[in-house]
Image (tube, rainbow, N blue to C red; front, side):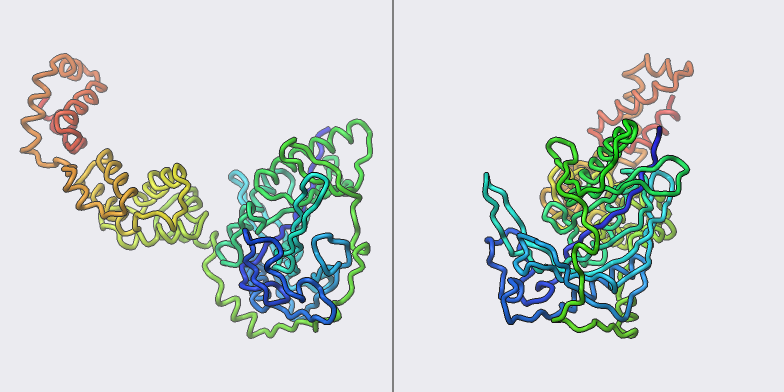
Length: 476
């Protein structure tokens, strides 16, 4: 039987605040010596009191608004009582009954279809520390304990690994556009948990839910879901019960493994955090946060289609990363009038992306300035240089950061677009290649390509190929 997967996700996002959620310790602890970004507050020492990080609240509200959520003006922090070996307080300050943001949605593209995933809530809590297992021992680093952690909880609206993959990649794109998080999964700034069950086609009732914890890469999200769907399918077909448990993903083995029985909310014994007052957000402040939101990726994508005449695909590729989108727009603003936005887009997604992939350089580290890339496309559009020469110039620009004009002069790459200059060369090529000429006159159209190649060879690649073809046809 073909079962329908029912998938909901909880995505945890570390926020880019200067300090931790409830104390003044630096939140930027990645790579720091263990247990150096700590204080009595985040260690939970007796007599200490937490204080709410305003930037963390702002960033969470920004994210909720970007996800079309309603922002609750009155909300509470709660104690989540559970044994965390890497959280010294012995409890986590989180939100339960009154989160910051509720009832939103996110539209995702899967193939050529757009699908809406409802967002149940976006709430704020503190992160735990980190355990490192060495042989029979576990080492605790509490630098991360207390870092602001935003949790985004979806409804169970996804039905495949591809949909879940599209959802988490869109979420990371949004938090990066907002500037609230790096979304760097390799550094633990974004972690995913999947709730998955199967049901027979047409059934209304959900099957038994299994949770897969701490997925720290997009590949893991896709692979773990695909494996768990297969595991549960085999169990159901063998008339074996699917048990509600928490699973971990073993990346090396490519399997999910049971970690513990699944807890319910009452197991955590939530109650209002006694050391923090209710958080009241003024409507004017919420409006100010809404006004401060940057242009979001889907809006930017649609604008690129409208303003620059790009295809939806090209616009999606260019707006995937905000810094790439900004680079492209600056290049378009400074381009030559003969260079189309499409030509600029082709060079950004073509040669520029190719070199970035080969070298591992992100766009901020690229030495070619947007205006210089625009100048290069202008030289192509005005037939100053041909495509082959442009790639040579681009290579020098990549290595040196220099402008294209002096490189073209130094390498003697200016295209020959003067009829008088080409006339003699074209005539010689025709005389020296009688067989292809005869073939062309007898209707073998492909022979012209060989003759154009001979003109290009005679001019060391400098001839304007379109003009060369035109003159060859005229003289033949």
